[in-house]
Image (cartoon, rainbow, N blue to C red; front, side, top):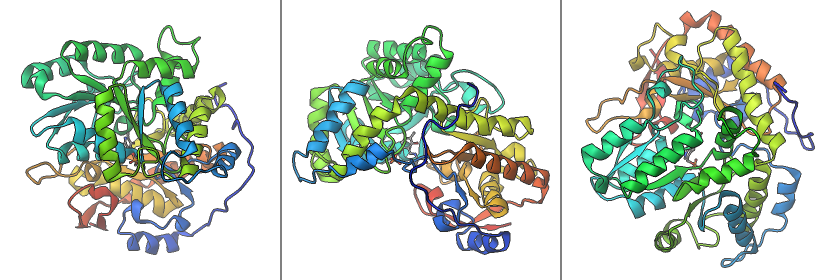
Length: 455
Ligand code: F0G
């Protein structure tokens, strides 16, 4: 079915507050034109992120009631550990409070000053931890990933030539691991093919480089493989996921996405020594290796959520609901990243606002304008998110986007219609949108807390 109906019925509802344009004008100004800083009560449809915004199922809420809050050896931990081993297939699991907790531990264990860490496009927190540990991130994604207009089935793939060239240039001994994200968030939620994962593994093995995965949205990636890659149509998403993970030496996971919970994460690996090191770090930064910053109840809900995430009806609806919004925008001629990816629709802000230069922060300005006009909250993923280079100048990413990120199981197709119409209406008066400038900028991960003023 092109757009399957929600494979769930609604048991609890949360009332949404409405605001009018005049109110939003003040609210936006108070938030420094940064959608991260908007109070959630003033947001109509919240597409800031799919992270931690999932609606839990009745079974997950029931899981909360059997939380074993013991400091050591919580029953829920054993269930979570067993679930991760079964569904993803890794030998060892270290729990963390969320994805960046796992990234911190992985980066500390693996990276030495002067190392290079290739990856299929940067992610903000991942790159920050690599740099904090003296490493340098190198983008080895295929060129099409940076080209919003070019369609492709697997625009998240690692460019094998770029990867080989890097090994030749800097030496395999200076590359502790390659980090393969599934799907690629900053490229628009674009998937990676099984064939590409296998090739990356083959080259890495030859060169004694470990292959780690940012598995944050790996179930969505598995669905795309089923849909688009030859030979996988008759396999279940669950089987494909396991096969994918089988090619990795380990993974970081933000449980707030594909594990369907509001908080949580883990670092998984096959190497026993690495696991020992990770357990000695987890007690410093997160908590005991049997809770890692999560409550017992949260671990139980995550174990239940992981099993629900590979339900074929859930994942099909998830992907197609996002596609529905993308199709509506594309049909109306709105410039978006094509094809639509797993978790979000990304608007190409430079095409939307051709009268603004990248220094005038077009994606930030567009996100602010969408909120002002409709109460829909989106997120900048452009020059503000990309931060500054070592020499202090802005890092100018090729993609300057606004992300309409769809939370899991939260909104209906009717909400998607509202969002599409809001963006289409705004497009009609796009020449009235002015640029923004920084009035406050923190030193790292600036997009979270920066403040702006209209030019
Ligand atoms: N990796 C990817 C690909 C992510 O998208 C995120 C978070 C993380 C790692 C970090 O995980 O938030 O649990 O610490 N992405 C959120 C987003 C913030 O909105 O895209 P975390």
